[in-house]
Image (cartoon, rainbow, N blue to C red; front, side):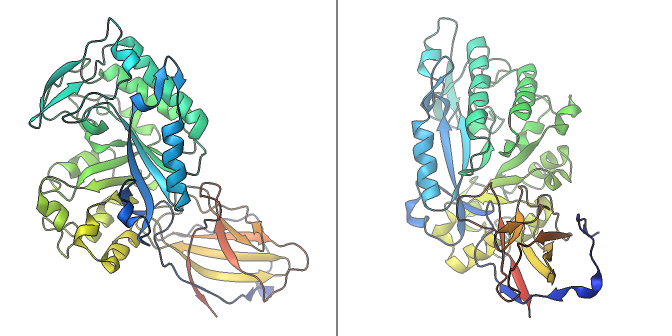
Amino acid sequence: MADTSCNVVLSEEVWRSIPIESKIDVPEPGTGLVVWDDNEDHFESPAIQLEYSYVQYAEVMVGPSQYDWTLLETKMDAIASRKHQAVLRFYDTYVGKPTGVPEWIRKLPDYKEQRGKSEGEMTSFPDWSNATYQNEVLEFFKAFADRYDKDPRIAYLQVGFGLWSEYHIYEGIMKLGETFPSKAYQSNFLQFMDSHFHQLPWMISIDASDEESTPIVEQPELLKLRFGLFDDSFLSKEHPKVNAVNWRTFGNERYLQFPCGGEFSYYNKNDQKNALSVNGPNGMSFEVALNKFHLSFIIASDQFTYQKLPRLLEASKAMGYELRLDQFERNGDYVRASFTNHGVAPIYFDAYPTVAGTRSVESLKGLEPSQSRMAIVKLSKGSLYRSLSMTITSDRLLPGVTVPFAAEIR
């Protein structure tokens, strides 16, 4: 059903069509294939709008409620200089590595880490029973939200616990309340994040559906919180029987409000090699999966090894929203524009049709796939009929970046 709400009602008899042609040559902002922020060979690819980076807590949390933002600022400035936005994930547990817990916390007498093999490598696991660490992680995200919640250099924030912050420790020392936070702390954490982030979309792994180690199933009220989802073994062989079940725990229509992303599976070399092949690595093509799970982005750094630019661009543009201008008309000092979303997901940030430097009152935020929405702009006096052009602007995008759209109105 079309959403054509607007604040101005004018006579239908005096609207005159304005010619405009436009193409979408690159992925929409905030969508598409994602490269790691150290994959410098592919920074300039037109298939890329987003860059991904892991960050250890220890790299920022330098003392009790004290933070050194230098590393983050350097990363984000570098990414923004390429007209890309960042996807950030903070972690404390990584196979074969020391924890990412700040050294000053690890030196506390009541903080005790554990070490054991995980996926064949000796790995350190944080002490989630330690009250100081628990509190400092919350304080860190409060400080992060205060500083970066409205920062257009960041598109998405991913958070979680366990290996790679993916809400699991499949191999290694999995002890709830010790190497993995208690359900009570997890619940508090999710509510805390929801109360502090209002502009920046934040996401958790679909593995948070595990009822043995997380509170999601036991506390369905947590599903009302404003978090998106990510799936870091997308298109794996086990995906239909494991991952798809995890997705359903969060509701089949969650994507209508909150963004979804992920990473192509690394379970074996075939998963990466054939991630974008015609039939996918395990019998389901990427495009079919997109229509099932409505991803806005996917980490795909290795795909540049296996695919050429036309396929990369095609796959990248298939994600997220895709706007088409269906109607562009003038009535005296007013212009109206009707857009339809031809993508697989909504647009999750405020974006305003803008004519002759004036924004519409109506935002395109929340425009769902196959829906249409009308926006009206009141022009300044004297705007010439033939000189009118359309852009879509947003404060959530980097300076000078606009939202491309398709149009063919003659």
